[in-house]
Image (cartoon, rainbow, N blue to C red; front, top):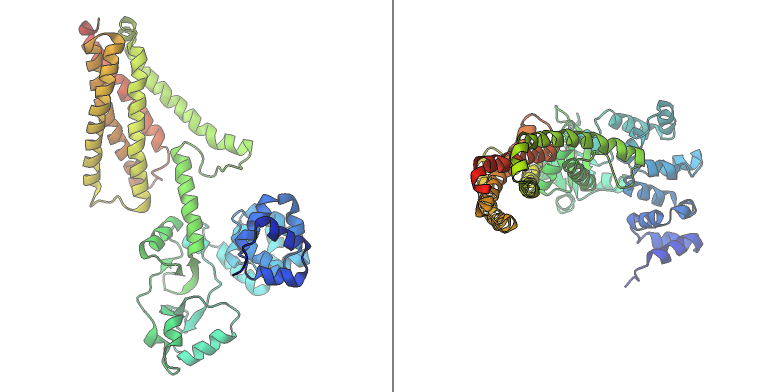
Length: 447
């Protein structure tokens, strides 16, 4: 059994071991483990990278998600060394790095470091929207010609530099995708068997212009680890790996969480002070105006509050609980829309369920608030007003939590965008209106 090395042991080996031992050990070490060491000890990153073979550095850069950090590491080396390293890096990663560079001269200088064939592939990838299937695909893949025999295919696989995957895609002379074939079917078939005989022509593919979120849904639906990307004429353009899809899922989930929380979709934990300020202040300003709208409702009932001051103590509970209930519904609905689980077939059923939840939650929480308000004010009618207002606001909260993201989605706006702000505004305004309105109607019983 091979002894599992700790991060510190691996780091010491890389820094102080001889080249032969390092090379032998690294054959059994995943690049992600070395990447962790680089993240943990940024000060030693240059020294660690200098002790690694170019192909290992390339694998490490393929694992890194931060394009700026990749550039920073590459700039630790001479242009000649950069050229050698980039020869080992995947084209889709190189494309992402170049796409992150704003200065055109710097972009062109980076492109000049690539071999001619690599340069053409990267230029092709740069033409696609980075948030589409074309933007996340790679052009490094193996395709098999449909008119070949199994023997010709095996000879090709033995001589190609590209590592074959479990599944290979079959194309014709015009590079039109004809189907998919597994390595298992190839090696168990007779040498003279035409490839089309063992090809599954019912292949699932995505178009280059499809949004990356839709691509992720397709991967999730079929459970694939690899999927071909095609154009309108079904020419094979590239492939998307499950690793890239996992990055998309993480990115989209983070974006939705940020938007639901009123934070810019691009903000991250390591964002600068200025970046975070720019992302957050617009939403805080929007919240300020919605708070003013809610307070304007309160101002209408100033006379009621002046007569029964205790109302001012209970009203935040009504609006706060309504906001919480609305956020619960909102979270479920946004997730359902994002994953394609909420559609025309089940929309009515989901709506009725959420209304039912609003009523049940309203009755339970309303009863508790009613009893508490009764004891607080020493008047059972005070409890009646609080309880009824809570039930009404809970129902409105679930309706707002359902309809706000659905309406935004209908107008092709990200359902996570500003949904929380709108839902909270609805529950605050209606909560104040219901509670203070009922108190006004039943004022003779409250005095």
